[in-house]
Length: 243
Image (cartoon, rainbow, N blue to C red):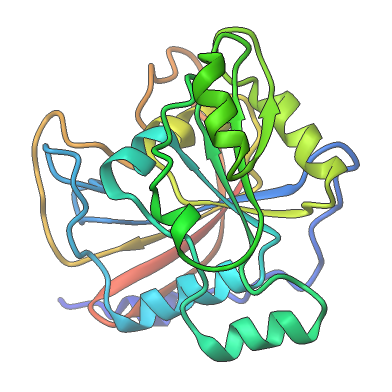
């Protein structure tokens, strides 16, 4: 029997999420294949979702104070992380905001290329989060292009970073991966919600990145509560609250 998943659409919560005084509201947004992969074994992006999901992602960016990625995503995909819709950029400017949310890279060793698209495309703030042991010359060069936040000794301390972002009035933070950053945030209890578009393709590969990689949880798993589930084009959009 064929079941139409669209009938299982749950109404979004009407109550606003409680405001955390020390960190932003953090949500992960990602597209993955039917077998849970977000990229190929070469760690290269492949088209998983369609026009409607891209537009949904653009709306999420436009309504966020900042968008954050890990250095792995920056090096493999070189994303600009800009708002694509001219109308949405104009609406942000009309509200007295930069046309793009702040763009943040978690980069413990200051490996972000100085010619990366986040520096070349679009207006707005750029923030590079580094550790204390990041090479000083690389940090100096990046400081000419972005604000530098030093958080953590050998790797970026995400708890400290989020406190620093909150102090900069970043209240709504969108995370666009990759799998290692997603794991680091989830495993530390720093994520409030997760939005996953599951596309109608299978990628396969034992080493292909999934939504969350890292070391994995040996004990109790991270619990989720379903917010909504709906059909979107030829895939499924699922929204979770992290417990």
